[in-house]
Picture: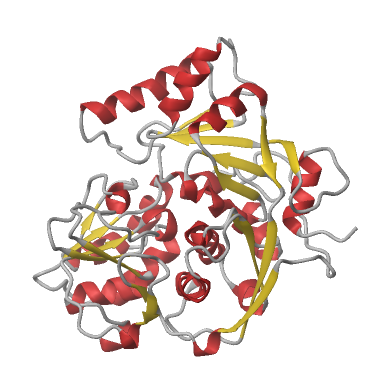
Length: 419
């Protein structure tokens, strides 16, 4: 029976030879993830269950990354709950301050998520790990509590949509631009409870960082997950990082898809998503004159070393416009150190930017860059809903690192070629 990569992974974790879209099944998980917003709720439910031990202390990851370093007493209490639970149950993967990075940057970097895995996380952007050829998706805190007890989760097997990308990307076009263009095409509900399977010659040439960006934003089209079949680039990334064995799956050539779409990327420019939806996209050449107050480069979408290198290559020799605040957020301590050793931090500071420790920060309106009334930001983050980064009258425009860096210098949204 022909199957997609997602169906094969779910079948293997359900102890089945095959599954079909629409089936309900219980599957064993390889990792359950929660952060400082969602973990305390799951911990409370776990404690109320009366169960004395987690199913596997090596298959749970607790990453305080949303309000860390703690911004107030409330956030300090949240992390304190996580810390106590991790100590009591000897959780192997609790990341204290200094080790902590943005969860969806940190876990692949640490070799904790691998091809062929089933991963659930109490965070919607857990779909990021599909870039490695895993089936990974966001769930609620109740599901995490149950998984910490049983090691299982139930799914309705989703249908898949196949997206094929051909042609040659332009100079500044990255994975962020491809996924923004795709969401702009199908809409924010265009893949609801489906798998977005990304394929084609363009995907095969993308570095892992860009693949993670694309998988990360599958949820912005309503998808259950995004996924890319593992190849040599995947194996190069995970070999040496992997903490355990893994298995790579591929879709069968005659697998059934709910829909298939194809894009020639040669005609795609760098994209900008206007407020207040990630699907409200247009090419940078059609943006017009949109002044900005803030530029944010980072997040689980674009906080990797490749993103910082791209931003630094544009900012080098320039100063940020006097009316703009530039905030750089490396995604993990490893990336922070790498950026420092490569001289990237000096470029950001020389451009009059500020550098945050690894944190989700302003992406969800947490801290480290909240917007005031009427202010505008361009950000490499993943969402631009009303009030997402601060005041309800503020506006967030989404773009890749190249456009965000250029815009910080220009004082308005624009592309690198304008510099």
